[in-house]
Length: 398
Image 1 (cartoon, rainbow, N blue to C red):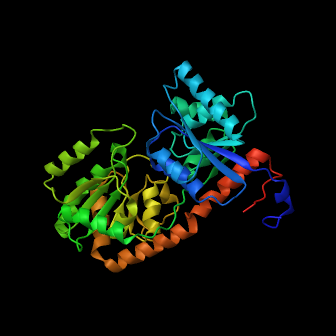
Image 2: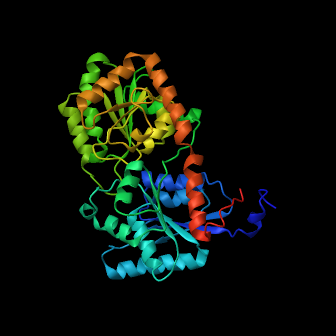
Image 3: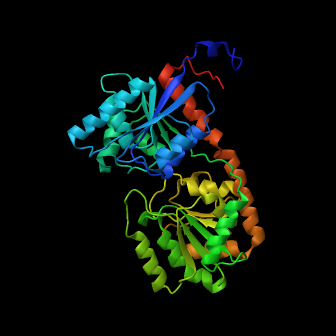
């Protein structure tokens, strides 16, 4: 008898299919990979489909995690022939892997799977990682159709998203904040970071403001760039690093706009765009971490990664992480799109190492209390087993 429960002898193994509609690695993809990476139940087996024209880095990540996966060539969802082809592909995967339930990380992936399951009671769940508009009919077609299709379970990255969906009349909704693991930094990673910084003229003692995230207008890197001249008046040796690049073919001209903004503000040599890099070494080197999205950001991974790394965090009121943070206790929370407020917050952190350390330690304790992988994985696994097997079979084989 495994795990000490008689019920475990009768539990079926759940074959869970993850549906991804991109092959690149954004925040939503990283969250579902963390659910797989930090899985706790041995009675759940993970599989995946990528609906894309190429395997991309996501395919490599799934392979590294030993997750069986297949790619289905995509087309425009409004094209009935492309939609039919994708649905047939998902049905084929469901049969081949003997899938019991599906979890999608976006409305589009949910709708593909839901269409594939039409005429059955096959449970399809979705992890909602975008903030919809409160008025139902003001949303895009994918959000509206997802709500009308009634997912078997809905996980939301923040309470704000959950409250909106519940106001739409959806009842099977639960908030599950993202979780991230504590990560140790290897010496070679730190050496690579310092090598890159040296190339950019940054010394080992210069204050480093880290802004992780893909380069897209709503992520707000331009707000940080606009705030930096004021910071440099007090801390002329400070540098900012924009860690990330463009993704999903969105805002491809945004990096050039940032570069022009840097030139216009005469702060060349103080802002460094280093592209996509592993974040661990950069967090270790950072003096503080800034998140400055200009639109609602469900629950930014960069924020909890900063907390887990014991780095002072500055975020704003549009971040879903404000739900778990107290201003001036766990992080500094400023008004969005406010360069002056952001500059003052950065100066406040840089002025006092003792205050910065206190903020970082409090943020780390908040991370431990709210955003570990186990705190994310356990409720998701329990709900998926419930919808796949029924409430009478929710034991664990772990």
